[in-house]
Image (cartoon, rainbow, N blue to C red; front, side, top):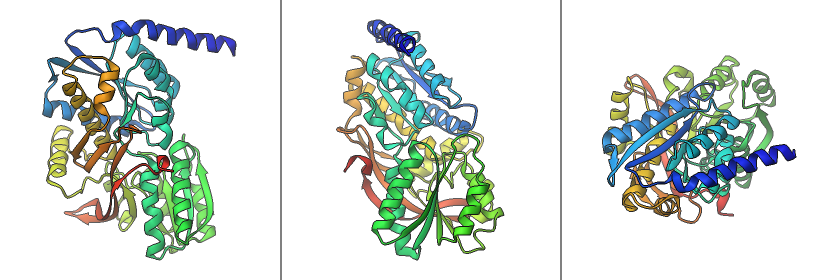
Amino acid sequence: MLRRHLVQAASLTAIALAMPLAHAQDNTFKIGMILPMTGQQASTGRQIEAAARLYMAQHGDTVAGKKVQLIVKDDTGLPDVTKRIAQELVVNDKVNVLAGFGITPSALAVAPIATQSKTPEVVMAAATSSITQASPYIVRSSFTLPQVSVAMGDWAPKNGIKTVVTLVADYGPGNDAEKFFSERFELNGGKVIEKLRVPLRNPDFAPFLQKVRDAKPDALFVFVPSGAGAAVMKQFLERGMDKAGIKMIATGDVTDDDQLNDMGDGALGVVTSHHYSAAHPSAMNKKFVEDFQKANKNMRPNFMAIGGYDGMRVIYEALKTTKGQGGGDALLAAMKGQVFESPRGPVLIDAQTRDITQDVYLRKVEKKDGQLYNVEFDVIKAVKDPGKTK
């Protein structure tokens, strides 16, 4: 135990010693982007990197006299690897900003490094409410699970759903989704019959879905991380749960735009709550989707892509505001309070919490031009993270 603490202390000391060098005045501005490019969350890494590169292609790679360099590293979705890579990026590569972070444990693993080295950590994916509280240098451009789960807890009881079983991945975001959906659903007169949690790594949904079928709720509420939605949908349909009269309701991770067409017509009619859909009907989003598909062999952008795209915007604007001068504290100050129009809709980076305030949409899977889309039918404006408003 003592040895581990000594090793950690030594590595943090190395980071502290590297700090004066880390932000030396040269003409390169380095963004160290840590993403799961392989493994279970590989689709997250692929989407975020593609979006970041699209932003740079559209806005140039020179900002405030600095040449922007994107250094992408694969952490395979393992937090120990994320932490090691972050230390190397800060000490050896002397990055100005750390960015990416596909899952919550990875974002949290880097928090002490961000704090110690005063390097802004822009979280473009991970969605547990508490992440921004782990370091004063964390800024989020993605979303939080409480933001999107509460909306579904309001919608479901008003639309004939009185009993629900919840099924979530057993880690931070899943716990948030379960808690905030259940509390709001019950506050609105609904009843949660059972709460099921599946392992994050290599989950087998079959035994859990059998339990749901036996419980016979009006609906199943689901959260799984990006990339796992297709497996849940497939097994849900294979068990004939839709035919047994059990509806599926979910956060938007389940009907992920990146995978939706592969799910087939069985996904039609599934209602989800989320902050981004490729079908969002704004001119800005239509252009974003078009440009993204053109640059990525027709791959459709999903909610991870929008976190990466807007995260790059937050970094670029901070660099412009600081005129390329000053270190992490100046950049951080320039990130706080940013207000802008995103392809997802209006966005604010809350200056107090460093978290994102944004619209949340209710969407239904529909077919348009022979393809499946999450079509928005209602909106809750300017939603702050409910995890921080208590």
